[in-house]
Length: 289
View 1 (cartoon, rainbow, N blue to C red):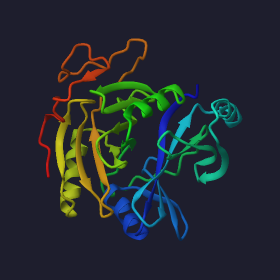
View 2: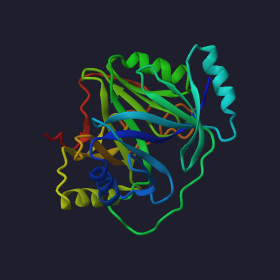
View 3: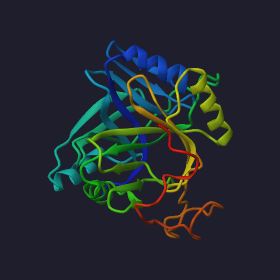
View 4: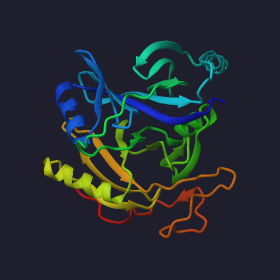
């Protein structure tokens, strides 16, 4: 089994590259660390690459980059994929921080870029926009949630955090409650990408940044039930939903098997489970328009 350690970046296509560059720099607060006419790589101010934007006909998810253990030979990953009859290729110079990656498609046909070694970008300290800590998770609409769980847990070492009946699953590759989550019932495609901020005061500031730049919240701020993160959502000018969140459930010790206790948990201890369909999206707060 391949063991993924963290989410690296996502690649998004956009029909208006410059407009999206302006948005992710001035509103989200990312920095461009590499750019050509049709492609740009962006990182947080702390030096973590989070996003590759490339010119395309539509706004959509084009790839997901995931880091495995540093020092892992990509050839060993290739042997694992060959044994499972999964085609792949090795690419070099993926981003300034990723010298090489092994690329193959997941069960939904989306390219995955697995890399082992990463070089941080140069950090910046000036305050611009929201300034997230990291890209936290990717959410997708899919035909089969069960197929996604099987692929990501059996091949890539993800653990299942929670189900909502049989129609949505939340999966983790580190202590965060979810890194990948998928939902059935909508046209297949990207549901949202999510950026983490350090605490609730920064989430409040993020809401003010969005409102001050005429980006209306369409959900939140609210605390979710599943995962219990406090979150707010809006749509950018490409129509893609962006989540900003903090205080997500953490499983610090996999052998204990429960999330770090919090006052708002429904169960003590809170363990991975199947939530009923009647579960509200929010512990508190409102779903917007």
